[in-house]
Image (cartoon, rainbow, N blue to C red; front, side):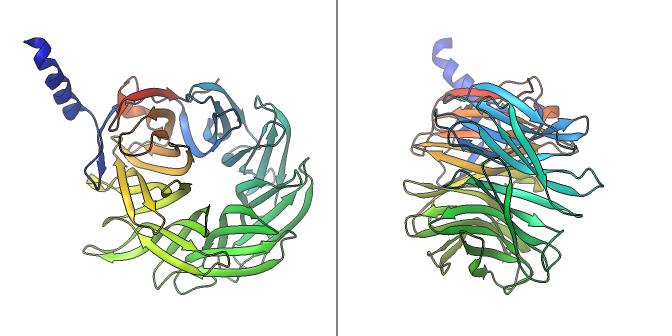
Length: 422
C-alpha cells in the first residue's frame, strides 16, 4: 500500500515545498534542485572548443569585487575558477575563448587615480593564468561590455566612455592587437548619453547594439550602428516610439540581426518596461518588433536556435519581485514557449545565454530581498517538448544556504553544480 502511495506523497511534497516554473502553454515542471555557493554575480557565458563553458562576472573581494573566470566541462562540472583584482571594484562583462588557446575577459576596474572606472582587459592561458592585463580609458568612467576576437588575431571591444566623445556618454569602440596593444579607438553618439552593450564582427566591419538618448523618438531608444574595419561609421539607426526602449544584446539571424531589448508599453496598471525583440535586415532596416507578456520585464540575452531564437531576462512575479525569464520564439517573433523561474527570492534574472545543439546555458543572478549579493550555481536539466536547458544563475545564500534540491522541468535532473572560489 505504501509503495502505491509513495509517488503521490513525493509529488505532494514537491508541490508544497518547491518553487515552480510557469509557462504560457502550461508546460513546465518543478524546481527540485539548487546548489548555491559563492557571493557574486554571473554576467556572461560562452561555449569552449572542448564542449564545455567559460563564465565571467564578479565575486566579492577585499577591495569590493573581483572579476572571476570559471571553466566547466561539457557536463557542467567546475574544473577551475580564477579571480582577477585589477585596482579593486572590478567586474567581468564578457569572456571569449581565444584561437590557439586561452581566454580574454573584458569589463571594468576602479581607476588608480580616483573613483572613476577604466576598461579592464585580462588575457589568460587555457588554465586561467594571466598572460597580460591592461587598462584603458581617460579621466572619467569608461567600460567594456563586449569583446570579439578579430580575424587577424586581435580583439575588438565595445562599451561606453565618459572620457571621450561628444556627449555625456558615447559608444566606445576599442581595437587591440594580439598582445593588447591599442591600435585605435573611436566614439559614436550625440550630445546625450549613448552606450554600446553588444558587438558582432561582420564582413568588412563591426556591428554594435546599445542605447541612445541623442537620437530617435523617445527618451532612450535602441541604438544600432555599423562601421567598417577601421571604425569609420557606415550607418546608424535608432528604434523606438515615444517611450523608453533599451537594447542589450545582439545575435545574427539567417536574414539579418536580432536585438534583445526592453520596451516601455502601457497596460491596465499604466506604463512599464516589457521584454522586447527586434529584427532588422543587413542594412539596419526594421523588419518587425515584438513585446512579450502583460507585466514588467526585460530581455537581456538572445541567441539563435533551430526554430528562431531563445531569450533570457526577467519578468515580474508575485509580490513585485522579478523572476528569471526564458522564452523561445519562431523566425517571425511569435512565442513558442516561455518559462518564469521563481527561485524564492528577489531580483532573479538572466543576463546572457548560449544555445548549443539542444542545450541552453543562461548566465544570470538571483538576490534575496535585503541582501547585497547572491551566489552562482550551475544547473543542468533536460526538458520534454522544449530544448534541454542548462541554467547558470546566481542565487542568494541567505534563504537557500545548506539546502540542496533538484530541478525537474518536464524531464529529469541531469546535474546540479555550483561555482565556488578555489
